[in-house]
Amino acid sequence: LLLVDDDFLSKTASERQEKLASLQDILRQFSFPTHYTVSGSTKTVELPFDRAFSPPETFAQDETRLKEIINGTRSVTSKQDLLEQVRKQTYQAVARTLNCNYVFLSDIGIDLAKTLLSHVALGRGCSIAQDVAFCDDRYGTVKLIRPIRDLNPDEITQYLKLAEKQHNTIPRTDHFADRPSLQNLTAKFIDNLQESFPSTVSTIYRTGDKLDAVKLTNKNRSEAPTEVDILGLLEKKKPPVPSNDSDPEQCVFCGAVLDYRGSKTLYATEYSRLVSSRVNASCSHEDILVKSKQMELDAARMVNGEDEHELSQLKKNLCHGCRNIFVDQEQ
Image 1 (tube, rainbow, N blue to C red):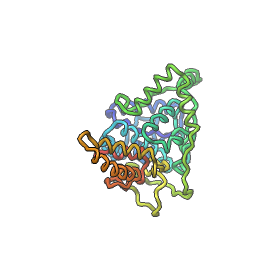
Image 2: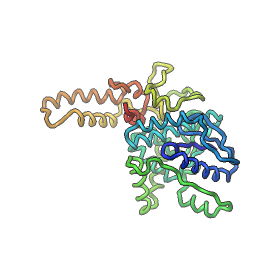
Image 3: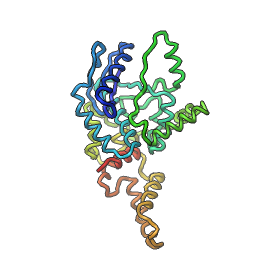
């Protein structure tokens, strides 16, 4: 088992210690070897069950780095999206360290329904199929598996009640649940709809099963090294040096297949943004016509990551969803 801790983002040291003690009690029920790490780290330590456990100092630097990155992100929407992507990278990086090819996640139907709709709103259409699939194989040899995706909360609750051996449980912590964001609004919308229409969740996430993931054209992709700096890209704002001169095929942050080039949808989004910022009521008809031509060119460059923005080189290596995270970082 792998315990990925990110409670340092919102809890005090005493609250975090109390939560860890509760988790030890829960994990002790299963007698599985358990490894502990924090979000954004590739290091792990074995979690003991015979004594109290405190987060080792070896993780202090990783905790501080992630805190600074989260605090430097303006919107709550981007904070939540960033944290989700960092957790996924932590799973696959630790799996490589432990020589594991499969990572089993605890996502169930309602989680995937919320993920599907929120990722549509976040502009992550290129990876939605893998985000809700039974097997997410975008990371090469390490595959993320969702074995209980067909279950719903009522089924799990009934199982815990009727199981011969009673299991302790603890609710999942959401550090931004009380703040407005696209993810929170989507989750609330689905929860409210599910109360009146019980088939809502099933309908939404079954729709995700019908989506097909875009395949890489380069079958000989290189595997990620075991020792990686998950948070380095967020701090340096520079893409890794490419091994050849060809256009990148995968997002360097989330691993999604890049499909932004020539996208009419992204072009319309960028053009609308430019119109809002450059055209006002005082502009004459002639001024608007002149600006319109320039905005068309600028919008196309922005979609393809060819604008003069300081993040332009990095944007060529990012999908639309991850671009929004990096643009939302304080400069």
